[in-house]
Image (tube, rainbow, N blue to C red; front, side, top):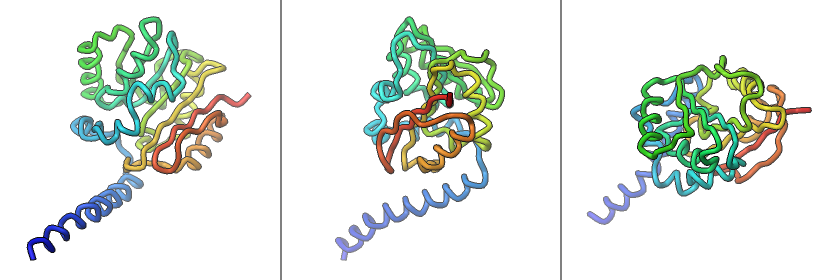
Length: 213
């Protein structure tokens, strides 16, 4: 009898997870909002880093030493550190978020890691405080689904990218805001981008876009 209860409990865990995940996806579909600061560490976990290791993700994104890079939505800064290490001291990484407490968290992490090539600031994706053509790469990891008007934001990313710059998205199926790759392709095309590279599959993927000529 006890064994039956234990087996039932074990089987109930994934069912409960799927149910809760589905409910969150439904809510997020109609009510977009940035990730709360208190959830940053919960979302950044060893299971996620198995599929999206920070430094290797920066390599996958096409980051190279000396690049000028814009990160949208840094979370707790784990991927900020990986990107900053990849571009090195000759590069510059600017990371932005609409939530001031998130930015303060990233600033502390960058300082603790001794990274002098990171600037973290509060900014609006619809009105970026940067000149045209500033960045070699704009990237975001499981963030685009949180933005209520993604095409509008992508047009602003298009403006701040250099003519040869790239726009990069990495997505993970467990994210409640996970968009299908086809959805991102449509959004990006509407903002003046075309696909250069796709890595991964349905469970996790990276899409790298370049500007339409």
